[in-house]
Image 1 (tube, rainbow, N blue to C red):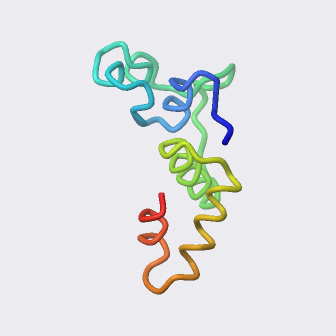
Image 2: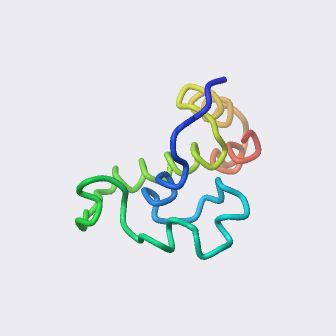
Length: 96
C-alpha cells in the first residue's frame, strides 16, 4: 500500500479542519490550522465558493486522508458497502 509522504499539515489546512494526522502537535498552539486559517498554496487566501460537487469531493477526500486509504481502495470499500444490506454510509464506516 502506498503512503502519502508529503506535508500532512497542509492537508489539514486544505480541509480547514484538524484531521489529527500529526498526533500531539494538533492539540497545541503550533498546529498549522490555528496558525494560518487559509488553504495552502499561492492562491490559498482567496475565498472560494464550492459547488455541491465540490462539497462532496472535499468530504470524500477528508475521509480518505483521515483513514489513510487511496482512491482505488476507497472505491472497493464503497462497492462492498453498497452490496450489503443497510445504509451504505454506515457500512462504509464499518469497513474503514
